[in-house]
Image (cartoon, rainbow, N blue to C red; front, side):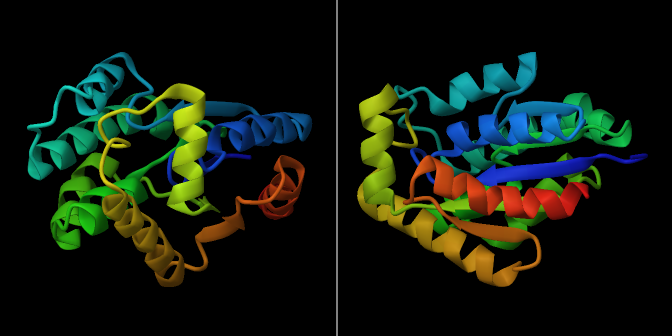
Length: 207
């Protein structure tokens, strides 16, 4: 293909994103595609340093605007250094989280104006938009239990449950707003059943 594809993965922490991303990578490589995996915040040396700052459990005084701008800064670097070059040369980029996370975490979760978030990120995105987004739909109660048992929690995950419920409701609203782009996947099922849903969409993308 002359131009590649940009696939983003969304869902609350513990929704099974990491496992499914690895399965997606294997599936697409089996189709002869060149795949680049990355994540947000992070994915570059600079963006990973910003990630450490954002997620530091000690950073409890961080303001909502500061948080939103840091996410956008990390995103701008990732787009410029990794995502845009890879897509333009025909690769498939799979990114664990992207701008939808800012809408749900800083917008619906923190109560920030969605238009402000969109305006800031319009500069960061530099014309890049996902071709498809997979939202792994798992209730926050279940997802956070999974995550805490596996790796412990960071600053965002340490927020109270009502924050995570607002984030989850935000994801549900985005699915309704962008049904052509965002594919809701029932993440409460077995790994194999979840990937079967994902694979059906991937087949259509790469055929």
